[in-house]
Length: 289
Length: 289
Image (cartoon, rainbow over all chains, first blue to last red; front, side, top):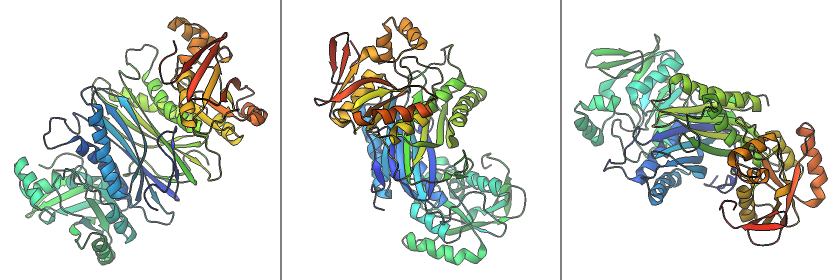
C-alpha cells in the first residue's frame, strides 16, 4: 500500500487510526542526549539525530522481516535546543521515513532537561508471512551478515527489504547489529540455546571500517566486530537453503552478496570468536579482549 | 480477546508481534521528571508514576472509543533512581495494565539525566466500529462529561469502557480531559469549527474537587474547569441521541449518570464559559481569568 494510504486519522486527534494487516509488529527505541549522542559533535546535525533515532527502531522491524508502517515520535526538547532545531530533528526523521515508505503518524513534544527522542514503529505482516526472531537458530545453520561492518554510517539505511527477503527465503533467526556482531550474536546464542561460531577474518569491511579502526586504534576486524551502530542484519540459515537465501538477498540488494561469517553448533549459549587460529568464547556481554 | 492472547511474540525479540484487528489506534505520551512530576512529592510513589504514565496514553485510546491492546514503555532512568525504584515504576504501570486488560508487550530502558517514561499504547477497533475524533461536533449537539472534575486522582482509571459505549451509542466528537475542560473543549471547538458553550455551575464536582479547590484557593467550579489531570471524557451528542447515549453510559458506568454541561452552537472556534450570568470567551489556550 502506498505510504500514508493506510492512515485513516493522524496528527491532531487523541490517537492515530491506521488500517491494519493481520500481524502488528511493534518496537520502541529511545535515544538521549549525553547518553547516545552529544550536541557538540561537529559531524552530527540535528537532522542526523532525527534520522538515527528513527533508524534504530526501523532496524528492529527489518530484523523481524516485517514491512514498515507508521512511526510515532515523542520528543523531549530542552531550553538549550531551539524550536527550529527541534523541527530539524523531526525533518531528519521525516527524510528517512520518506526514503523507507514509513508514515510519521503521531507523536508528543514535551519539555525535558536534555534532547531525547522515543520512537515507536508499528510494522506489519500478513498472517502467513515468516517473521524471524532470535530463538530459531539451529546447529548446522550458517551465519551471514549484510553489507559491511564497523563503518558507523552517519545516516544508516535500515535493511528493510533485505530483512523481508531473508525471512521469506527461509532464514531461521535474525537480529540487527546495533552493538557489534560480537555482542549481538550472543542474543541469538542465548535465545536459541546454541553456540555461535564466528570467523573474524571473514567479517566484511570497507573503507569506512578502516576509518573507524584507525580512530579506535584497533585492527579492521576488531572494529568490524565491535564498533556497533551498523544496522546491518545477521541471519542464521539452514545449509540447504544457503543458495536460495543468497539469491533472494542479491535480488533486493542491487546485486550485492551476503557474507558468510560462521556457523551454529551444539554447545553452551555462547559466541566463539576465531581469529588466525586463536579462539575466544564470550558467555555474556563483556567486550572483546 | 483475553489479555495477552493477541500477543504472538513479546519482550526478548527485536519487536513484539500481535494479532491485529481491522483498525489500529495508536497514541504516545511522554512524562518527564521536573516537568510532569517531581520525586520529592510525598504523595507520589514510583508505582504511581508508572500508573499515571500509562493512564495518560490509555485515556487517549478511551477518547477515541477504541479498545485497549498493548502498551510499550520506554523508560529513562537516572543515577538518582535505583533499579528497584525503576522496577516500581514498571510495576505501577503493570497494575493499571492488568486492571484495564492491556498487555505491556515491549519497551526500552536507557540511562537519562532524569526519570522519564514514554508510553505508546496500541488499541484496536473493528472496521465498522465508530471511532470519535475532535472534529465531529455540530451545532445543536449537547455536551456531557463523565465522572466528577477537578479531583485530580492519584491513580486515575481511564474511561475505556465508557468511551466505547459513548462512541457506539452515537456521540459526534469526544476528548479526554487532561488540561481541564476549559482548555480541552477548545480542541473540539477548533477541530470542529464551532463554538462550545459551557455552564460552569453544571460542572460535576465531589469531595475531591473541594479539596483541590481549597488547595488552589479558588471556588469549586473553577477547580472543576481548570485543575486538569481528570482523565474524564467530554462528549458531544446530537440532541435526538441524548437518551440513547445516557443509557449506554449508565449501563457500563455502574449506574452513574453523565452530566450535561453545555452545547455546541454556530460561531467562531471558541469556548464560551457562562457562570451566574457572566460570560467569558476563550479563543486560545489562555487560562481562565
